[in-house]
Amino acid sequence: MAIALVLSAAPACAAKRVALVVGNNDYRNVPKLQKAVNDARTMGDTLKQLGFTVMVAENQNRQAFSQTLLAFDKAVEAGDTAFFFYAGHGFEIAGQNFLLPTDVPAATEGQEELVRDASVLADRIIERLQNRKVRTAILVFDACRNNPFERSGTRAVAGGGGLAPMTQLPEGVFSIFSAGPRQTALDRLSNDDANPNSVFTRTFAKELTQPGANLVQVAQRTRRLVNELAETVRHKQIPVYFDQMVDDVFLNGVSKGPPEAAMKPAEPQPKLAALPPVQQLKPQNDSVNAPIAMFSRHNGGWTVVFSIADPTLGISWRMGEAGDFRETGFMDTLDPRTRKRMPNPSIELPADAPAAMIQVRYVDTNGELQGPFPIRFDPEAALIRDQRKILDMTATSWLSFREFNGLLVYYTHLMSYRCAIREVRVGIDSTVPDKVLKMPPCDMRDPSAIPHEATPYLKLAPQTRSVSVELTYRDGSVSEIKSFRR
Image 1 (cartoon, rainbow, N blue to C red):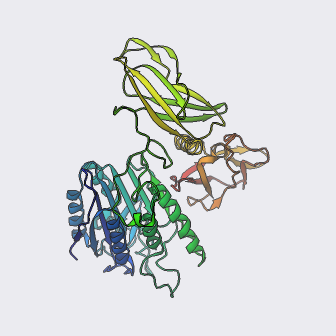
Image 2: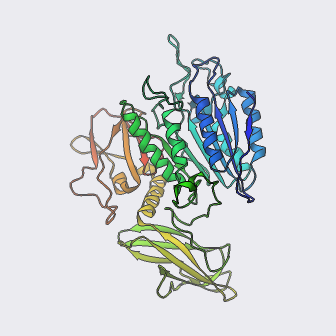
Image 3: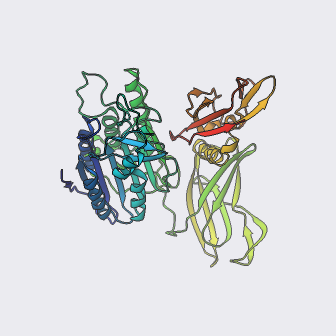
């Protein structure tokens, strides 16, 4: 079918909201689907309500899919918000995700190359949007279904139905999957379920229109609601999302207003300097070099390091809207840009410091005071991000083997950074982690301490040769599967 290009009223500003929604039902050589086209139409209608210019493409063969993506390329420009939604068959080969056009061949074992050549690489869509320099790219995949190449009496293509986690997204990209790894997404809850949409899309589309919710909140609510619906029919389906957004992104306003506000086109959204949604605080001047901050948790409390692009002659700060500003002091180092002592870029906060707004200002090389600039301090969000970063950097230390009255595998390292982890799964002599490790709850007062009653190891059979491990982080994203050998 030809692309239906539907224009809708959008806010009058340079940056636009542009969406492409694709639904594939009528597959020729693999099982047909029932609701993918309906899902695409529902998402198109939802996005139009949110001020997007929407391109709807249905039952795309390979050539049509390529032409549709070219049209999407031309529709987006630098600074735009781009939204891509796909409902249909998806397939993972060697960690890469492929979206299957309706004319994909019925491949069998050893014919993975046929699938690759006939399909659309999901990572390539991200690259294309990056090349167009969009500010925000949102990708939604309702494609976590069974392996479409399975046939009775034949061996299937070496890959997996559904899609692999996209853990290495570039900055400015947000993606959400209708189901987690090794899970299948439900089209319906029962034979009596008359809803025209899949369980994921019916939920996600509704949550997108909730006023005052950012993308992470939409994803978290969708996860919970889809999981609850799936559990009513004893099915495991937990959507996962992967967030590389620098700022919070709101598609339907930044604060809840009267009910009728939900029906108005979305206003241009302010960008925030922090994790949770908070009211925008405008600096006293319009410098483009506003400081950013990095928060690190240690046994004694918090270290906050300010990063300022301008050369500075001094830095001062305070907590909240009132009180005196405090100087950070100076280091015993000369700044080659100013030939003066370098201001100390860091401050210390106590371990029990509450959430607050840090006001930062600095003196530039002309002696003029810049700021104050607001930086949001949220202890829980900062701790999770800090520990997640450490876990990503120290993946080789997640597990360790030890011989002591038998064979043990220790996961002390994971316990120390458990506040960033929702679930740990391991596989014993298997590359598929299928056992959940018991972890103590996060203690914000002393997050790295391991409770004395906790057991940070597993006893293994003497003949065990390897253990695989996979982490589900607090934001719902999933790590790569790491394997540890004795």
